Length: 116
Image (cartoon, rainbow, N blue to C red; front, side, top):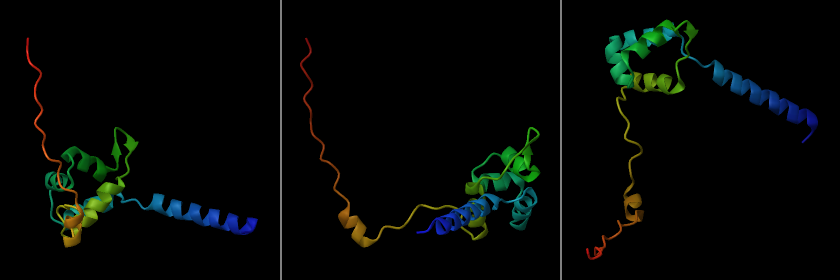
């Protein structure tokens, strides 16, 4: 690979990382999300697993005078709730997976040492 191709790939990687970093939900978008689901701040906090105060900070976009970004996990949870997913238990086991799980170890009785 030529030096020029490597430089182009580095630029592409930087652009990708920058676009991911720029993918933030604005405070007004967060509030618009909440209102679109007709949730109070308290209800939104419960649905997201947050405190009501965190929802207030996200809607304001700052905490104690400092800019506050909405974490990716919260943004993804907002999307999941919009799609009707209220909880996630993980992937379902296929019938073949249950056969491959090792049986639990058998319990062994252990004698206690004699007391003096």
